[in-house]
Image 1 (cartoon, rainbow, N blue to C red):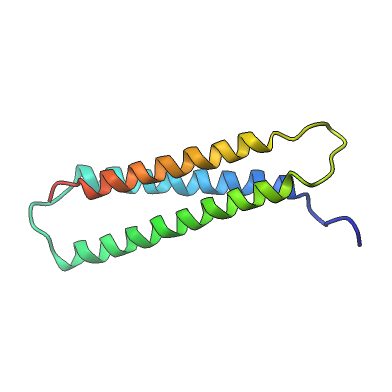
Image 2: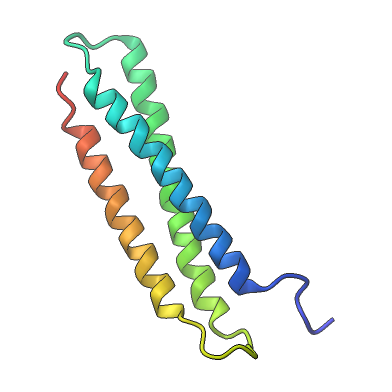
Amino acid sequence: MMFPPKSGRKAVRLRNASTMSSLSFIYSDVMAAWISSDASRSTKGSIADRAMRERFLGLAQQIQAAKMQAMIAKWEGSIRGVWPGEEYLKLATVQSDMMSSLALVRLMRID
């Protein structure tokens, strides 16, 4: 009862991997939309913009959850030595910066 069924630190690593995967998919979508931007704006474009906004918001929530999980996981005991919790927080900060840069590129798309 005192030990969790899964390590919190493993959950942090898996969440960071998932966040990086989501970030890479958004990157490919943003670059594809930026390369193939049309001169005319249609209803399909606004629907795609709304879907992209939802993906960015979902990614922002994932990054915030990763930060919180990393802060909680540092209190977990370890027999392997010191856990680099600060590095995981830095990784989440870099992911957040990458996401905001991609959002700016998406906004600067030539219509």
